Image (cartoon, rainbow, N blue to C red; front, side, top):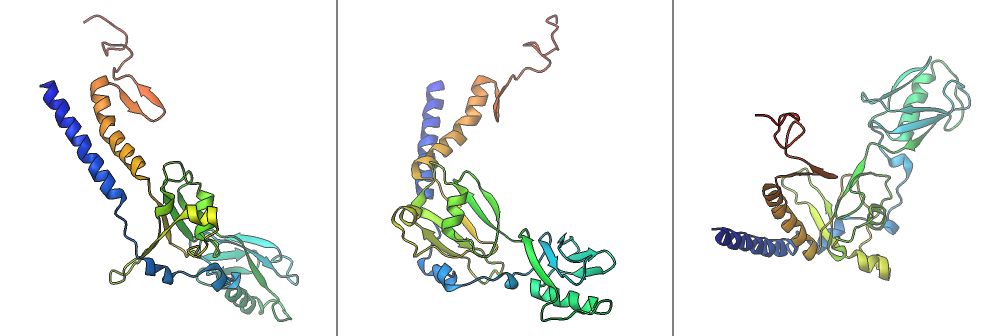
Length: 263
């Protein structure tokens, strides 16, 4: 009976190996999709094109108004910023230049402002927009989008781990429109970093995703671990938890009655 169960388990593991090997070779990649991405030398992203949203942080420069000059504000969830004696200003959805112009119009009733740009709005913390890097990296998750983030800088900052398949990295531009397919292409990070091939070093946009897949062997190892972990729990009677083990007995001793060995 045990031998039959062992054979069944080995067969299942072999099936997992085949599936894992197949999965690691199946990526949705379309080389021409790179045409939807801009290259660093093709675009100059200026701060005045950045659209403010919560919780971006801004700093106001206006030498003529002491209570406003050099004041920092984090845009509130309602999209506004406020200053003492001056009131509230809607910042969300505006560029820094548009917000400065809006503030100038509202403040002009109380102050005489002269000059071409008497109010200057500067971004001190970019917080509202992110891109994502996932998979086999030491620092996965959402990353603050600055407008000049490239594939090379993003992957290098996330630090791929030894399980990463560096020549099959996927760059993805998701689509919220069901009728428009996401744009996906592959990047060979080894070639990019070791040989200086920057042909696929594109500028990322807000919401872009970089996926670093595991190598074939790494994917197989993860599948085996996924299969073995519950079996190990069942055979050892120990709950395996992150960072160590915990006894299955409740109450303090093998009898599970808080230390009293009597029945």
